[in-house]
Structures are given as C-alpha cells and as structure tokens.
Image (cartoon, rainbow, N blue to C red):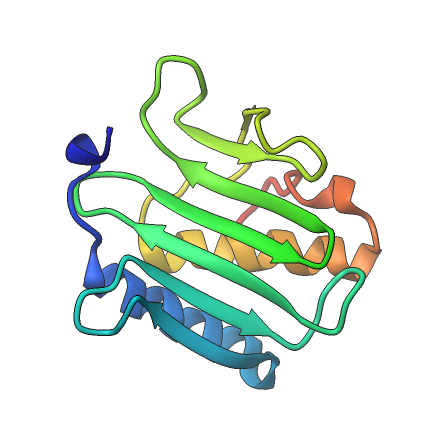
Length: 143
C-alpha cells in the first residue's frame, strides 16, 4: 500500500500547516515536522483547545500519488479522516471516536490539501462548538 500512495508530499504538508495557522489564528501552539523538516513523514499540529482537554493534536500525512490522514487525538479521544484506496473501505473515510477500526464514508469530498484542511477544521470546530462528537462527520456544505 505505501508504494501505491507514493512518498510524503512536502508541499502539501506546508500548505496544511499554513491553513491551520491562517484559520485558527492563536489556537496553533506548535507545528512540528516528524522526524524533521528535511525529510518529514508527518506534520503534528498542536492546538490550545479540545473536547475534554485544553489541548489537542492533529497528526497529518499527505502522499504524492493519492491519499491523506488527519488523525486527531487528545487525552482519551481519537478520530481520523482519511483517503486511501482499499478494497475493504470507502476511499474517503472517517474513523469515529470510540471505534478506530470502523470505516464510515467521509463527509469530506475534496482532494486538494487546502480544501481538505479547511473541511477537517470545520468538522472539528462545529463538533467542538456543539459539544457533540456525533457532529464530526455530518457537514454537507464544506468550504
């Protein structure tokens, strides 16, 4: 599977970081390229807000051929939006909180790094404002 996705897309990760910083202003407390900025495998964006904590993190991967992963985590909560081509799951999918192995069809339809990031932020923010995790994958008119 990793060979089909291609290597990590450095330009996409930089675009994702820019959207997080532009849209969430002072909520971004850290953005780190892992293992380093020279040869990143993942972008980790830490935010000063969460559902049950005062901080959370999005771990983001984006591949050159196709696919992405936005993995959200805070103390005892995780969910993920992703796009992978697998026969056992929808291409663009959502792993809901409490069941990380379940693949639901994602409400996010975009494939461009900036638009996907805006949609992920909107899904997260809407659920955070509502105080309802069920809202995470329910947006219909994404940015």
